[in-house]
Image (tube, rainbow, N blue to C red; front, side, top):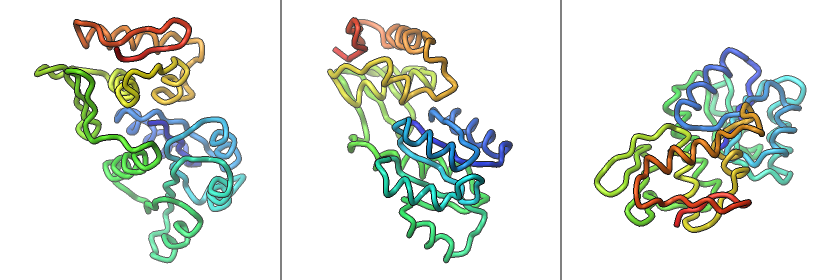
Length: 218
């Protein structure tokens, strides 16, 4: 899941981003509203975590523009104000969810996953392809009776392929949905991850390379 975190407190943003990446989210960070709007129109994010009190362009104005514009991402607003009136105001701007500071990371993660499910085409709770299964909720996957030990990236790549069984998913699409803007666009990370995932899935092979187009399950 691709997430944009908009938070001007660099230390807090770093802590949140590191924890989300540890839970297999691809996270980009913007420290002000102007940069947030720029990124939101450049990348197809699933969810935008938006602090209200940010410089350049206030969070409320960012939310309004995204809701009125062409951005399809769900918006979760953050604020240090915990009053009910503030929550109502945030939601009235068009935000999909609202979380007051301080918050527990487990709650933020749960809310992001819920919003991510609403942002995408509805997926079944358990993904299956032949004898391979993947449970997004428990972050577990396996083939037959054997549970696979996958890295966060490998798990996310397999989830993207299983969400569109038989369809070709390009390296660019995997790069956008599984990694974040820290990845060098000339990196071979996608190819290496797919190779490792293919090996872990075992025989007979399930991931095919479609030359010049990407990868698919077959």
